[in-house]
View 1 (cartoon, each protein chain N blue to C red):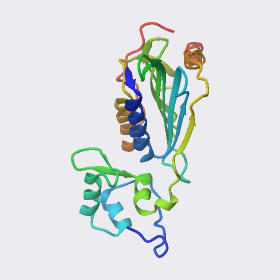
View 2: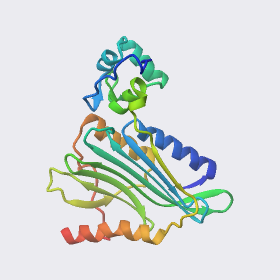
View 3: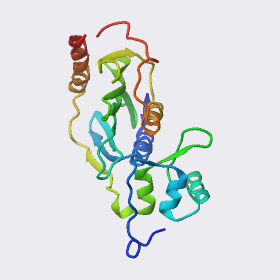
View 4: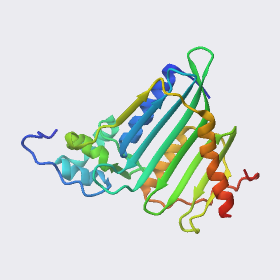
Length: 149
Length: 101
């Protein structure tokens, strides 16, 4: 995915606003002046003095493209249910899209699964659904990865 | 909506609130809360056609903004990002996964 600097700025602002409503957010934007840029937005929910119930951790790495644009080369969108130990993540790295999932009711074992390319907003809607509805992370809807990496 | 000098901070003891519960805390009618959600003044997650849940953080922002921790923003424009190191870090868990199974 290729984004102009302006579009990437808007993406960062929109995502920050979405996470701020769920918990205490931290935005880390590194390398905007260089050739590789990392954007990481983490929110601990519900925030304040309450015990942490869930973590939304979204990380994207971009490489500078021709013109004032950025090309996404790595992403890691993660949801961790800190109470049950469940986890769902969508990753792109080394050129391969895949998912990780831990179902806390199934021995808490982490496996990786096939996944299509995900946009951070799609992933966020799914993760937010788990959190707001109080659902335990399940992995039944994912298919195991064909090639073990 | 609340005068922070005169009115005490409401007690937020839940992670999510229904519009009715939020209305009780805010001392307004539930339809006012729904209007706030529709207008974007208050963030509420729509679970189904008639069911909304309001995260406590969102309600805090409306009723007691002085108690909300501001978002921490770190900007390091000239720090170097090591793409290979990030890929190695993400690939590490595949090896850990393989060892576990």
